[in-house]
Length: 600
Ligand code: ADP
Ligand code: MG
Image (cartoon, protein in one colour):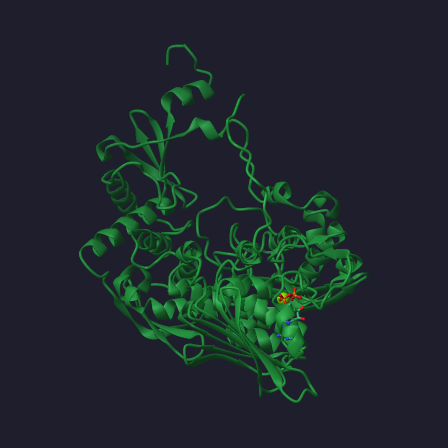
């Protein structure tokens, strides 16, 4: 193919532009700035770290430490790309023990903010100070200051409007900031952290805490008390951590904290090992609360996989997988909370199944259930083994149905889970939980169209310990909770009191519903005033408080349920998209009984 593009000259990008491009990888949002700055403080051996943020980190992120500090001459150098004091050669990259090593963070942050850098080393008479705006140094001064370093990033992305546009609401960014702080503080329980949001001190964590007390400060005492301590050393691997009892299960993996050599990581191998250890102890799809520290020779783990450094590669991943899953199972087994029954009977209310699912057999000892060799390649394919396989050919025999109530005659209830009906077309099954969920959802939605959802006060307010991210989020959404029929009130720290709930939740324990709602909503990052927000919130609320599997309904209730379902708009699915009503046609029945063309 002929082209007529004139050749363009190749140019080296000016430093400023190169730094802005690099900033795109390192500084995704305010929370990444917080992370990089605190990691630098930890690398400098700080014992006390102060973090202050304002306006979701857009206006200000300030990190002050009592670490080793920098010499005045090094301040300018620290702003050069690939300038680092942490590695000197390619060989050093094979055994990294510091959190930083790429020498990219400071220049990247400096490129997209107004930066102040102030530092003094032990023994130096005075400190040095630098001011940089959008990558340009505008002042270098000598100042008096305490030993240690202060870095202040103001007006993040002030010179990159395209990036600024991608920032989420202040509440969302605040949630990310708090989440990042929690991860860093869990990574180093021995270091003191003080976290100030606006003018308010959110966390004041003393130095020298052990992991359990740090977890109690950050995740809440009730959560920490429902966690089992783990401590194991297996050959090349040391493991220390806390494993939550299944009763703590969550709807998302937002409280799965894994650290490798003091660095927070999100790693497929580790996650898979964790979920495998909990398999059979909590409903499918629920996630545990765990805080796990793995220590191993830095030579055996590659952290230089991605600029954000949350991905790692283990050179002995299979052994890591086995050791972790084994340690978790032993730890959970020791707790004596779950004997080989499917659902725990001690340690809080049994986890509610978010959706009806086929029962599995009783829990069997892990060794028999999952021979270690089976998980040769933990990873995406292995993870899929979680899902129950459908017996071949059974899936397509039934199809979703939408029909008039007059066409259906209720026959009865099956397994306390399905309503069986006859229809001229064949046998009809209604999933009673899915049906109820949809009806509750429609009712909530209609209620909301009239104004705020009705609220029912609780006789005894229930308390709930939230993560700082959720707590920040909950606080900023106060107006929206009333709309959704909820009355939530700060109760000190990250504890909140639930004072009122929509009537459909008032009969039971409202805490799982509110907790799921908050963790889903704060994780979704949706702005509160969007229809999507309301939609997601309603779905979450509808899921709880609906008829669960195993609930016997009287014939009149079954009739009523079927009538109401048939009055809905198609498609007949629950708010999560699963079918509510399925038809096994007369034709299918005939075929299955091999009645074929014979006269009936
Ligand atoms: P990296 O952490 O990958 O080395 P950075 O750009 O984050 O790269 O920091 C560059 C250098 O600046 C560091 O290697 C370190 O020498 C110095 N530095 C940054 N922050 C601090 C701090 N809080 N205390 C002491 N030195 C620091
Ligand atoms: Mg760094």
